[in-house]
Length: 128
Image 1 (tube, rainbow, N blue to C red):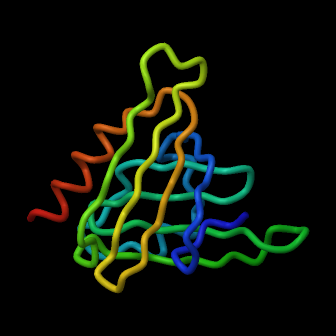
Image 2 (image 1 turned 45 degrees about the horizontal axis):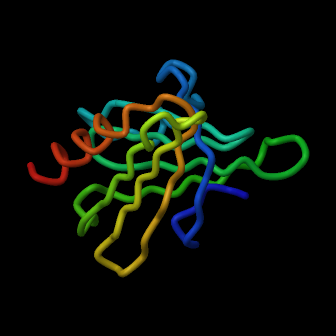
């Protein structure tokens, strides 16, 4: 399932190095904007910058067609994080973001992702 801000969905995201973010994203960045964290599914990516969240939906068999969707932190009304439970075999965590247009995006992170760090990053940019 593609990453999209058009549907309420949960995605299994794994962290990647910010250097591994698709090169096309750099063309979207504005002055003084930088990539803070990045995650991927099999083909798609979710990128947190210091100004917004960018989803990259890779389409088609060849993957040459891509859909980019962005949501600035200024549109975040509130968010919720769910930490992994004690002694869970697979330490998954979740992030739900409610935007001021009423849409809620929910993301599931696989493995040992520091969900608290993601919450602090969003808070820092939302509360500026």
